[in-house]
Amino acid sequence: MDPESVARATRVPHGGTTDSTVLDFSANTNPVRPDGVDEVYAAALSASTRYPDDDYPAFRAAAADYVDCDADDVVPTAGGLEALRLAFEVTLAPGDSALVPEPSFGEYEREIRLQGADAVSVPHDEVLDADPSPHDVAVVCTPNNPTGELAETDRLRAFAARCRESQTTLVVDEAFLDFTDAPSLAGEPGVVVARSLTKMFGLPGIRAGFAVAPGTLGERLAVARRSWSLSTPAADVGAYCMRQTEFVDATRRRVANERARLADALSAQFDVFPSDAPFLLCDVGDRDVNAVVETARERGVAIRDATTFPTLDSHVRVAVKRPEENDALLDALADV
Image (cartoon, rainbow, N blue to C red; front, side, top):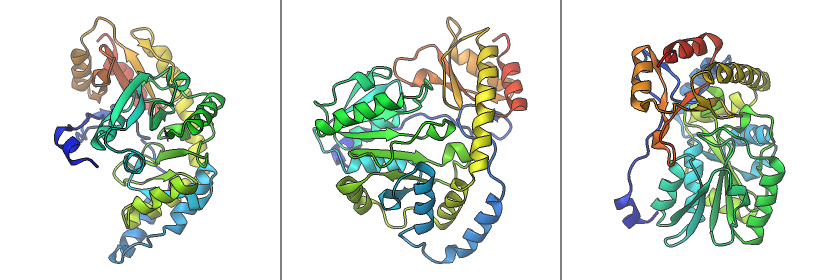
């Protein structure tokens, strides 16, 4: 990390609220978590009087099965964002260049600039057609946050091949990919995949995730990773959750059904972006975004002001939750 760049850095706004009196649609986390998590957590807490095994064999094995890669290529991290920081730390130096989609997750640009590198933006729907050769790193988010579209697998693999040819490291953020049936790019040469367990399993406070990269790139990540990068509860709960395939399948079906229902209802008021993710981006048109957000909150629902994303000036983002919660969202946004 570049000390001079840190002095110029700022924090990035995110969704999520600590106000338990409102329904939180501003963060894209599953409102349901797998059965049995409480018991796994309690047992792990009892075992937390000792340091965890820094090899994390059970977690890495579960992660490898979850994304279909070699367990030796899995690098445990305290959430997906930690995986992204690790990827940029081992691939970027001051003066380097990184290609990033826009609008997309705001932490990409921040983390890149913390390394003293330059973030070069390209429209999110053009990134797979961009020339990676001038850049040291290229970033793809699939499905993209906040727009929600999934990158076509063939196009993404073709872009990965072009990145390899130009010796550009490709960083793929798959934080929401497990809400789809698309394959992971985990294990692809020259690619760092960043995964989060926050969204699918509804446990943002656990802080569990991982990076995947093969070969020398994976070795660099493994060396740079902090020792004991996961707490014992995070490692044990994470490994348990990734084995809950029926839960994942049920969540995908619910989200797909409810997303379609919400999109249809909200399109009567707003311009709703097509989405493959557990959220919808809505253009509210001539309405004042602050007024829309505040009115929804007064009616007991928190939604994300998406104008904090570059290029979005009249947008909000809403999560997709359970039917009864989604009904409350629709009531809160009625006639805003």
